[in-house]
Length: 190
Image (cartoon, rainbow, N blue to C red):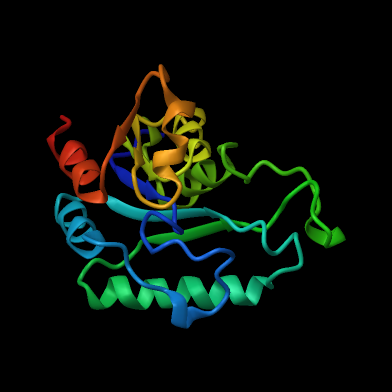
């Protein structure tokens, strides 16, 4: 099935919102500098806006899925108020070495595996080959590559600066200093 929907996939913590170690309180959700403007520009250009986030704190027993849902709901409220509503938010609560048996599994949805991308393609009709990934970890970049996305950007926020060397030489991957720079490159890419 040919689809025309392009998307930009974003990591949550350290990318769209300020990094808070194992965030479980919605009061701690703060949009990253420039996030609202970037999301609006991409939305106006016709991109779906999709969040994909590993939340291993659930498998580690540090938070519950309800905590994750409440934080995600707060993120959705903030982006909606900024005029850039998110089209979907996906997360993976699994970690093979976790301490909570129910979530201590090997799965296909934990980035860099492409399970969340495949789910978005199936549920929202996303053309992954015309889509992009933006995140602050090498796993985000490899998620984009494994999902067959056009390009992936590693932002210098969150853990990005420390992860830069891990993507050196990866085709279709680029380090950028900010969300703004990533959005500008996506909007200029024809």
